[in-house]
Image 1 (cartoon, rainbow, N blue to C red):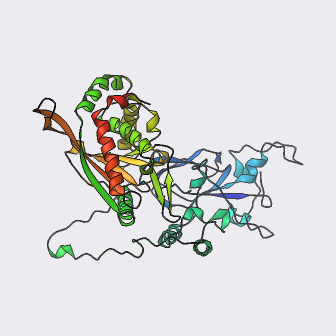
Image 2: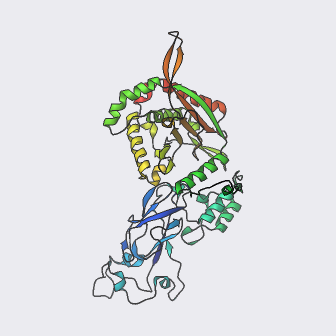
Image 3: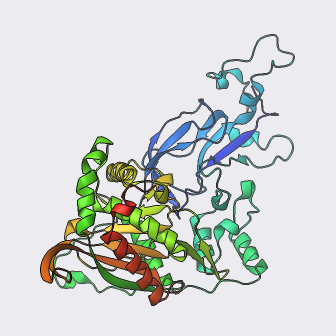
Length: 447
């Protein structure tokens, strides 16, 4: 076991959870002081505005301090636990000049001679470096979304001056980013992006509504605060244009009925949305510029060579947009099963953070709530979103038979980023969608 001369303290901080999630509530603490923690072992159960998940450890050692408790709100970069890593690292090797084996890790405190508290161990005899900062494994394998250690105020400052916090190198312990690091990065860039319309924007003051009658104030939930922030940012930063269209969904509904039983046997529910996911994926393959993100800072359009579609799901907590991956490679039965599963897990709050990452296009269906045409707001950093309304039976003139026939017509709303697409581009995309809806059997089992 390590003594005051050899102890090595490592602090595990709340990692960057991605998608601009800066804080989480602690629901449960899975460990205690004196426990030996290993890699990937769940430490906390936390709730963000998007999901409830277990926070895995990226450190190995004996826990000497726990800095959070149930009910706490913790932010990115906050201390979670401190461990003594040296004792565990030395345990497999026989300790020199000791006839007895090292004591079990379940009794680390009893095995150490009386010494200073953990905070003082780091400062023993000669100046020692600050505790090491653990690099969390949550985003391993995604170098473009590396963990970032920065306080919310530093993140806010970076956003306000148009700096991508992911691109900033941190000079603090474990790569922690300070405001000075952000300023240095901004000075070193060859060309800074223009400030957005949101910079310096403050909401107008409200009148005192209590003057007019009784009122009640209800705090926004964490999810609703996130929706507020994201929708405000999207509306201010993206010039939205919405095209309204209609499509004859009669034959598509027949396909849905034809394959409905097969989908149920596979564990899914074949809906119009699941078929529309397949049609949208094929449309994106034919119009790759719609499957994109705009890098305004570099004046580049990033074309995605994958087709991961976000699907807006109405839940008791609010609107969430989980992602179904590789839609272009799946048939409608597979999509029906996956959509049924992800929708159920979204409503029960069982989705993880990875279920929300990586969408390249979004589909939202308000038909079940009786809505017709509407203006869906683009889910940043996508450049477009397709809205589906409630289908209705309408009389349509059949030129071949020269008579009126009853057809099922669905309203469609396509919102796109006018910086990326012109009106003609959006019209061509919508025409392609409408034509595909009229002949759905071609796409039904493709994938």
